[in-house]
Image 1 (cartoon, rainbow, N blue to C red):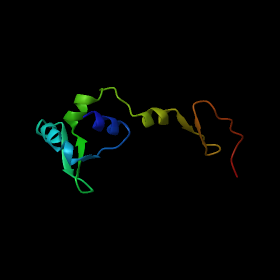
Image 2 (image 1 turned 90 degrees about the vertical axis):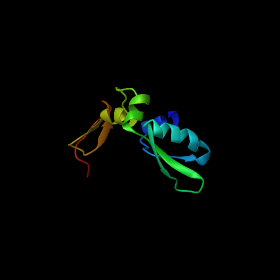
Image 3 (image 1 turned 180 degrees about the vertical axis):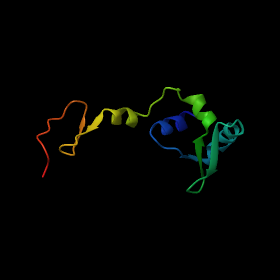
Length: 95
């Protein structure tokens, strides 16, 4: 669950695991916390958190780091550039 939560936080919705973890994954799937599917290479399977699983391991106030970062980026209509927080010194249209 921790591995899937960590991957979810970085934007990955599926992750590959070795079939050595299959028994544990089956138990988590029976409880409705993850869903599994075949892997993309031999001896693996893919898993993802279900809604119930996300509620179990993620804070309700969780915001992905990229979302936090993007809210601090701004677009300048004058020069069509982007800038972070207040660090922008526009001199007019680029061209």
